[in-house]
Length: 309
Image (tube, rainbow, N blue to C red; front, side, top):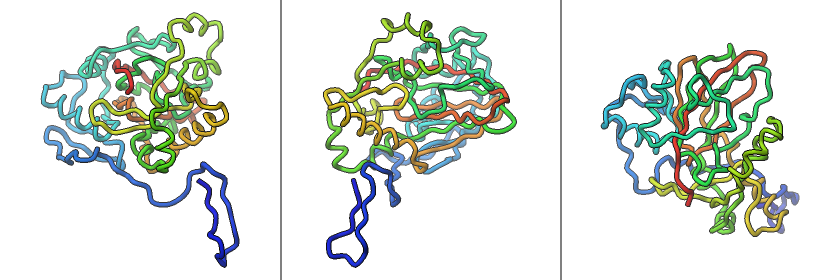
């Protein structure tokens, strides 16, 4: 919406470009309506922000989880969207075992594998990176990942943070007329734009039939909490179905901006051995590429998800 001074005002008339991000109060609601804010009794939890991000203490990811601990961690994941575990140093097998508590694991053939073929490795130094843009993992799949477990094996002497944004908070703060316009809207997601800038095209061609463009709701409903969340991202969302191209581009630009609001974000500074576990359904993330020429090595395991609704 544009801002214009009221007729007859003594203040000179002004106008801001439409569809911007403006200062002012924002609704920061961590829990779904009616969901009680209960304490955690089986581990320590330190919030890193009002709506997203918490550091967990007293859980050893190198050992099997007791069922009660797994259940309470699941509640923490739903409520805080991304959990951080300091100084864990899990092996690839232990990392996979931890992630497996949340379901079947999946691999991404577009990514390099580590020593374990079921674990994706991100080995970065001065090479260009496709991670430093706000995105949700693998939304080009019919069933995007439920979540992911990322382990930092090697960290640079400075930089290399990762940021996450709460897309339920982003949806909550949209203007009512925007929410109304998005009701029932669907968007196309395609792996090509997210990878083509940094991957030889001949390597991508064989995957076109395996990963055809898919449609997802622009606003999805979380299958557990019931919260409504923006589900479009810069890397993979190409257009809103049935909309004029200019109208689609304008709306997507507005929606892409929402992840950039600091009140919806948490930023984590890694140490070697740290682990993050995030709800991929409810968040976007951004790997800050500010550490060249130093090396940063991370390994990720993904949990298979459901069809967004």
